[in-house]
Image 1 (spheres, rainbow, N blue to C red):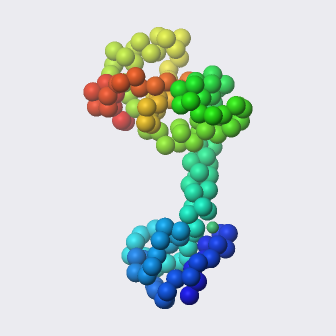
Image 2: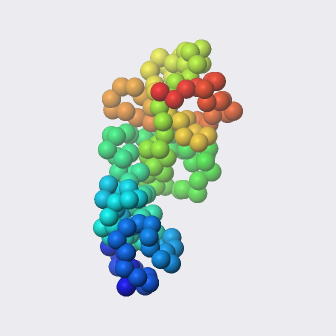
Image 3: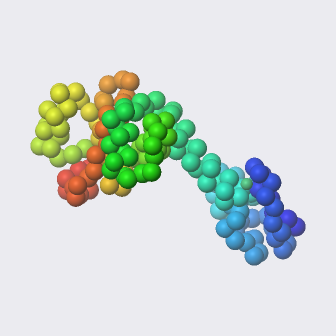
Length: 165
Ligand SMILES: [Zn+2]
């Protein structure tokens, strides 16, 4: 019986009937089963191909960022491009990239002494910090939440120099 993507219709034959993941013979990573509640012992409701899944994941990050209602300053976009060496030359694409990266970031707190310095250098505006990979997003505490800049960790260490909240 053929296995096909519920989204784009991409089709590929599989050898026999099955009800449950992962009891699918000859199965490769071209398709991912969508089960009830996304659990491996759930009944398979259909399949999504790897390309559609990748698009969905990208859109998920983007939508999540949008739903957080976060604004992005031009400065933050420029710093992001500079720090990640991303090959992006326009503001809108840069903004999407920042939101996408930000949506994966966790809120952190730096050691007190460092935080005090940062409050001063940000003209006494309170900011929150979010961290992902080697990047730190500096975000206003007040509404509208705005990503004011993007910095690098510069070797600061989790659970020593900063902590996940
Ligand atoms: Zn597809």
